[in-house]
Image (cartoon, rainbow, N blue to C red; front, side, top):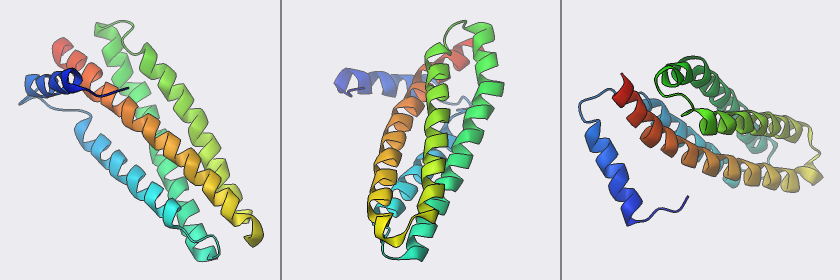
Length: 160
């Protein structure tokens, strides 16, 4: 996704269209973005020579992955059926994203758990690999949430 003036104007118009309407995504997505950004920063700052620092970073990744998996399940179980009922096919691209997210979540959860068992001499490359994988996950999710907050939210407001 590349943002440009026309897209930003569309986003602003979409947000205004829903003024006064309940925004299903706003609160949880703000919380997820905050947790993702804080966790990415914590992993990036972690000192690989400090076992407690590494443990804290790995634990935060695990907690973030648990929340993300729960969020995906909630959307799949409740939001997507409502959207599909009134706007058939609208959820297919996001559903594919969700499948990829669940695979990425499993991978990051495993990497965080492995980091906890990594010998001190091997922590630096393992921590860097976790950081890079988490950065891609965060970037992908930020784009994904943008689609939900614009395309899906507009569809929800139009259909319900």
